[in-house]
Length: 374
View 1 (tube, rainbow, N blue to C red):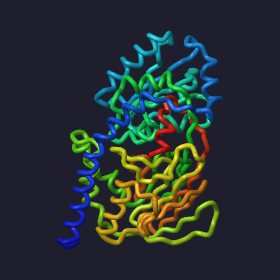
View 2: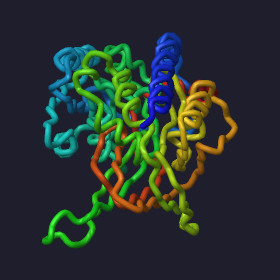
View 3: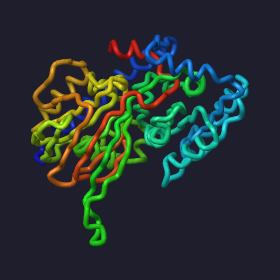
View 4: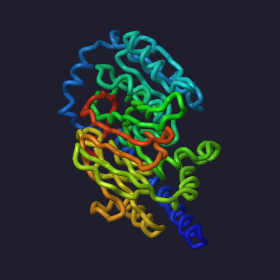
């Protein structure tokens, strides 16, 4: 990398950090306003009616919590007091584990008859619990304790106010949202495993390969503890000028097309931290995923992408292509790092993605109409 290229990369990264910090102040005011406004959810009336049929005494609440989070004990006390003050039975508490972000705990909660399962942690914990509740009558409640909390932000939840999040998670109106089912194809890892391996996951926010996965996998944990999501900027500065990779993509069964990309995303939601909207067309309840191809060649192209994101410029730009579909298949020429909702999941050879329309009930989705107007 030349000195001028490195300077460009650092300049873009620094500009991103400054702009995010400026927008963050506006986001706090917007979130507070959103928590006072619950949009009319006519299309989800059947969900609200179903929840309303249960008396407080009959509803059972379970909490799946990441015990490594600093505010874990605070959340447990808030959930207990909220249930007690509204006549609900004491919640059943499950702790996630390093090797299981919450799937096993969520299954056990459902088996014990929980009507609402709260996921307290980062996007990984939320995704793990959602993968079990997806397609069932059991509602998901989200209590954000992570670095990004992108799903909670896209749902309009008051991420800076734990007490409000607990109230919304337990007593908020149910709303059905889309999920994206992913099939990840990995290269064989040994002589005994000669064929490709297929793993199944779900995504609630954004999955992707290339730059975003490199950044998620290489962000320093100590910086995340001190700087929160701004720590991703440091990793981004180190990876932003990496080489583009060859991929083919097919949408809804159409003929595959070839592209040289730095990053390729599959978005169910479009908002990032600090109120920035990366993919304005991505909506969590429209039945579509948004395939996004980033094809920048140099720092100036990245500056265009940054400007489009910050200004919410609606027109397409050549280095950022967005296409909607219900199904997408991405095939990599060589193994590519991949991430799901902010969690790096290793290298993949191909990804098959299918949208499941309104397959997950989430409590406390606030400000839907307001979010659509931004």
